[in-house]
Amino acid sequence: MNNSNDPTFIFYTQLSSAAVSIFVTINRQIYVGDNSSIKSNSFSNQTISIANVSGSCFSLFIDINNSLYCSINSQHKVVKKWLNSNSSTITTVAGTGSSGSASNMLYYPVGIFVDTNFDLYVADQYNNRIQLFRLEQINGTTVAGNTSANLTISLNNPTGVILDGNKYIFITDASNHRIVGSDENGFRCIVACSGQGSTANKLSSPRSLAFDSFGNLFVVDYYNNRIQKFCLSTNFCNNQRKNSDLIFSFDYLDPTTTTTTSTSTSSTTNVNQSKS
Picture 1 (spheres, rainbow, N blue to C red):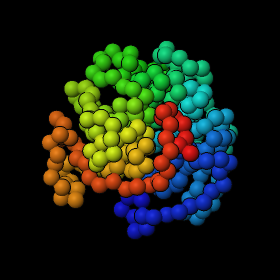
Picture 2 (cartoon, rainbow, N blue to C red):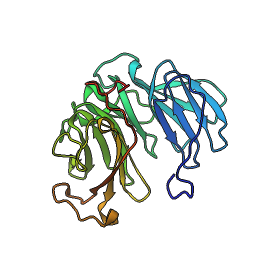
Picture 3 (cartoon, one colour):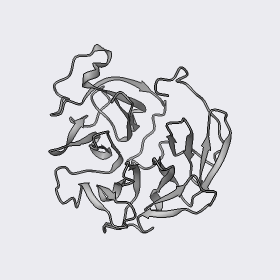
Picture 4 (spheres, helix red, strand yellow):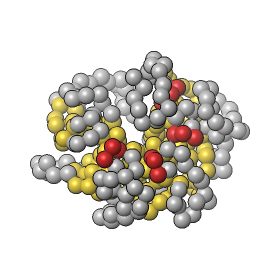
């Protein structure tokens, strides 16, 4: 937990199958999605059933209004539930339930992010694009990748999307093994721009990403079985000198150390399949 005196915390919850997604709120409430349900767990280790879903919940997000979003990739849609209500009602907020590339459709949605305006960003993986769905709008706008009105970068199986405090967009471009970021000039590669690999400056099928409160970037480096940390350049993480090969125009990130989180060595060619 960021700035916590107890950064390591093991919790137990009754999942019907392998956990697929996790989201932790600012009050440290933990939400976990598996192949058929979403559950909540706190530091008291009390498990609460939130909702049953009809497919794997690849990504979870909870907005500032305490609404929970779940991307059900196999059903090509994103659903939403208001957590302050006792109702079991879940509504579809993006996608139709069928795969497609029209503005109101998705094709294997994975990572999701909701900003303070309640605008929903979706990593529309097999359409190789990031879709923006404005509040209560069924048609999305492509903000990055294929079909974008201002195509400044191509994507190949994007799996994660987040926004920073300046509303710049950051994307895990999985099959290009890199992180893409935006600024006022459009999109460009910002991390791991020299191809797939296992060295400190490379990635292999990155899945998702997140910032900490200091602006440092953490990436799930899937096929390298590790979490990779990239420091905000002004933090001078570990007193490392900047690698000029990785500096980009608005001087954001530098690579630092890695932490192994899995010992699995098996692999597949589909970035959505389990490695086990």
